[in-house]
Image: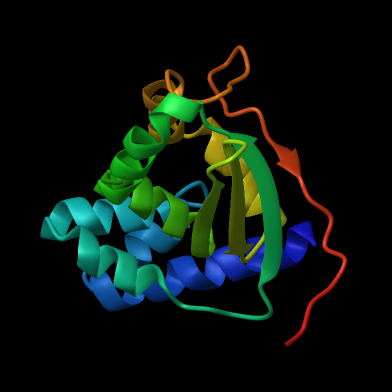
Length: 167
């Protein structure tokens, strides 16, 4: 699985570089530590156009991995939670897309404050790296006053097991 993810990332990196930095592609391609995320961020900063960067990265390959989790938002913070997500930081959106996130939805049970999050990802290893990003940690800190969190400000969450899927 890890080798597949690495090959996918290298392929995506190659295409992003080739299509968006034709004069520098051979220079970037030699840099083994230059990740797809780095290319995307460089691309978005270079063009000052986050939307275009997101579109460039939205290249699906293979089958998606469906994930579901539940978290909890404080009862008096529902509107704040919704408002903050409606105003999601562009850097956060870029990071999520760069780490293979697609079709991300969060639902609220207003009776209990339970949030149900559904996301499709391209690669478990790539997705696992989101927690180490600076922007994700800033987002967790930003959200920590309105939901149940761990000591590191990450949301207290429980991954759910899929028991049925209709394609």
